[in-house]
Length: 147
Length: 197
Image (cartoon, rainbow over all chains, first blue to last red):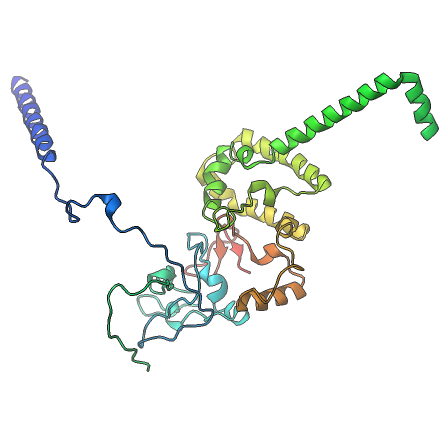
């Protein structure tokens, strides 16, 4: 009984000491990467718009997931619905004129083909991206393999 | 008939007649004022059921946030503008008051469970009146197909000639959609999803 009490007192002292040490460490200044520049003096956020091409953009290399040539603002990809599939599903595509989902999207990770789209392809924007009217941050000499 | 009214007016005297007329204006004005009070976004989201679910979703959509600052708020889409249909809808809304009291959708989970039913009843209402609330602003006849996108022109002309109404395609534009069966992954159990268009 007595030794148990003594142990708990020791633990209390130790934890108090730790708390003091933590407070002392927190007072040391954190050196941010941006240096002494205050946050309001950073570049203002630019506003870019999603580009609307209204027809497919050619791929720039084989196996590239096709780029989205239209605005997708507000499109829901939720547990309930995938708005992209309203037009791009195999069933809807002939009527909507959209590019139908590729064959590969019906294959699961074991390589088995299914009548339904594989759930691993559910989040379209993981691979297919819309384009914005922003200039490239850094110049480059990339040339499309297709041309 | 007119003679009867005149004799009645003579009997009650001009001052009483004037008083009755004034009272009529006050009562009608008061009734209409109260009705319009219940026709505002502020009134709609005074229930947390509306504020926590449908209002939050609506704030990310074009009818709430857009470049020109024009908004279509709750009653613009969900309450008819014409007097007769408006009164009918307002009377039906007493059922919604009952379910507010019963707490039928007082948690987001309960709301999600009821979403199919709620959405389908609103879609049915809009189909029945040819999407009148949409067309209060978006007239078919006033649409300039020259200004619309390629896809929009093609789809609109086909849909209009087939007699489709706005809500047949433009579902879930202001709120999130209920589960839709889109043939992705394992099939959804029967009755838990709406069929895709």
